[in-house]
Amino acid sequence: MDKRIILISAVVLLGLLAAGTASGALINLVFPEIPYNYTSYVTIPAHSQNEESFVGYYRINGTGKDFNFKIVLPGAENNEDPLCYTIDGLNGTGELDRININYNTVAALWNRNITGAVFATPMNGTFTTHCGNWTGYGNFSNNGTYFPGQFKIDGPVTDFRGSFQFVQDGKRIKIMADYVYYPHKQDQLAKRVVNTFYM
Image (cartoon, rainbow, N blue to C red; front, side, top):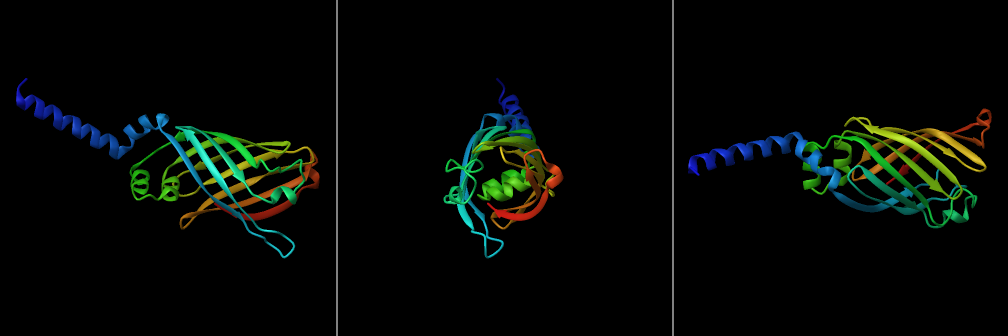
């Protein structure tokens, strides 16, 4: 084959690769096959003198758009109703319905800034959870600027319903939650709670 044809083909191929990488198209094509595993701390601070703060960990692992997560807060099982929280912690599964990996995502990962990569990546998805004898479900979305979600928990004794917002706080993630809780299926008796958690 003529060397000029090889050279032109190589230049075109490199150009397509560069354009695909810059737009995120190739990365989004490869993403469904990429496995990941991440573990970090989670903190629920006390909001009054009568409350106890908890420090534990969360773990997220998955492949592509499907993921699992677990949150464990050692000691919390001694302060909660055993029907609501056990030593096994909170477990869940989720699915990303849409993810748009872009240049900012790649740049943040290159700099080992996982939190920055999460917030730089437009996405939306759904999740289900279980903990003790209750089950829950919810959704989340990130447009690159605003990262809110909603959840509902159906428990044997108490139900919860509300919203949350992920906010980047340095290398941490702040979760601002606004929700109500009430005796099972008696939402007319709802009480409101505004709380903040850190991951």
